[in-house]
Length: 286
Image (cartoon, rainbow, N blue to C red; front, side, top):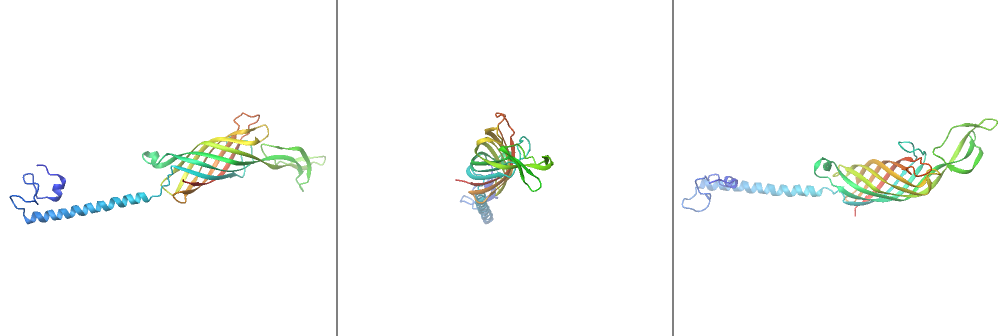
């Protein structure tokens, strides 16, 4: 008769030709040695079961104690700004100043899990809305002397330009060195980026590197960045940064972004602008 593992563990003296119940009554009384062997094996089996019972709940408790930093959905409040714009890859308009205040929504698309991609990061779909945008554009006002800054002439109406010209030129019969001078005029706008993605690396850690990208639209009260462009523009950005989870329901994110804005050639002029943005976000889970 075949011997199952538990028989080997509990009843080592049993053999295929003998009864499989050596500790029970029968025609032949079991020997004291066999009783002693059964008792030792039973104690070992109970000890092993106790270890397994203690180990598995402890492991499950440690796993459940890990804070859930992969949120299914979250909302955030954001503020971002750029002290200047410059020619990074597509934009021509320079020395603009940008400020935006708004919020956003994120939904988990791909949770960390199986596969190399799942173990590496979480993937989110994002929407960002900024009801308040302010863009300050340089407008040429007039001409003034380099020495003493005396105003020598004003234009009939200030006009916005693509870049600030700080070159010194001679002016008048005495060839007085002069420069153009400017003021920064604000334009108010609203923007929406409904198509966005964000990757969170090391998703089980409190501090997570992030990479983001989005595309959307920018609607302003007048043509930007110069007259003759358009008040309706397209935007896209890509950026990277870190998100720190203050708790299981709150986090702060800091990103450096490059944002491009242009009318895609639909206006009379399309200088476009590239802005290096500092993006700060406070996120919370509902």
